Length: 185
Image 1: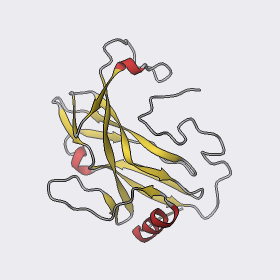
Image 2: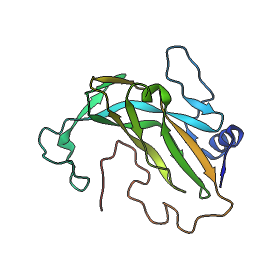
Image 3: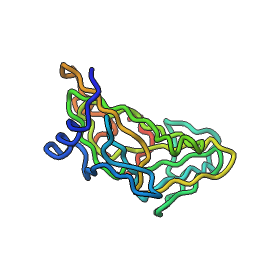
């Protein structure tokens, strides 16, 4: 496996629609950066959020997590209560090649505020909008911004194709368009 440089990411995004919309580097003042980076791509979050309230449930169970445990928010920013979390969706739609695995890491701007961004790897041949979880570990409410960077993606290319891709196994989150709660079927 090798880490792919920005030139490869740009080429795959533009020629093969791997990242849509694709944005070149941004460094706007007062903005959490997004777009192409040296060895990755900083994805953004959309303006739709599912804020965990959980007032009706006793246990957070990934096999049974009702929509009613979340408050839907459509806004340019989201305030996450102390020691709680929000689900969001990437602004970009991704189509990962069969010989590539994408690893996601939170951006340091948010990490320095006690916010942890959790996005699982994008498996070979997965496609869709990513559902992103942002946890606020601080004792205070914390703010995140729509249409700005939230996580960095690192693309790892294998010399061989995987035997079974996410598409082959008909993964339960294939081609998701909205913020998607846990699925077990």
